[in-house]
Length: 432
Image (cartoon, rainbow, N blue to C red):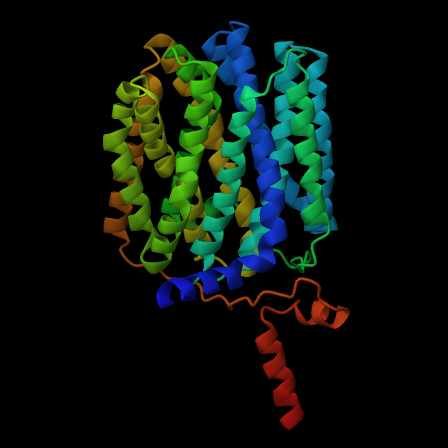
């Protein structure tokens, strides 16, 4: 009992100052996850070929790729809060623009723009969170971040059940969610990272910092992109009702949510590479069974989908934590951009390749692709661990949370890594 109380107190200490960021994350993810499923369903209902639908939906991830290589300039120029607010506002407007026309080219362009907005927003959030973390709690903070992400995303899947005879209600609801996401982040008292001191990190340098973490981001992108963009189409082709499709999408994301905390905490206690290889090894053997369980009743559907989600949705936060263990604070924004780029390359590749395989071979390729891709990552990681068994971690200064409503003096103090270090420095000057 004392251990549980101690763990909860530690969790509260780490998480409570970051509540505004997590709240903004939840609303954004709820909106974009439901948006992706709604688009996939509308494309399927209009009898759009699966390969064409995959390309249209993948444009979203191409936009995120473009954001990962260019959005850091906006953050460096005007700061995290202003960039988050601007692109969340633009995203709200883009959602409503879908109601004007169902033209495929028009939707592809809108999806590209939406991907750019989401990629920029996520770069703001992830780089901000990682500057508030250190090697001893980064896995925990990223786990809570991903729990928030997937809680919002899983709830967003249930929006498929909202009656929408006009075809506009869902767009309006999602636009409202993106607008609400502005409130907690725009009004947070949490100090933002300094914007003048970030160092550039190239694609190659990020890979060299952690080949396993970088490749895992790509792998994660392939798996998540396949699930989000093709999951609705796959479940529909398997004969599931709209209600069952929403359950399939909901519990897939919800399974990832439940697994975040235990696996994130485990990754703080051991070499994160072993956690990653273990997750993918489980996925290699269990993914094919999902195809045979999905239409065997609601219970089988829920259990099989939760297993799938618990594996595919935990790879990214652990790989991001692993990379951030090996870099310095002033490299984090560009590293965040490169990791988002890596994941989004996977997010583009996955839907295009798997949708083509599904059209050529059958819907079973949706489930079997998870096993094949995970097997490739297991082989790569095992080979890398054999060649480089030890890791040289970068020692980061622990971060103490700032108060919820700091005074101006507290804001100045909080610009340093810790208030304790600042107090110690002032004390040493006084006694000298």
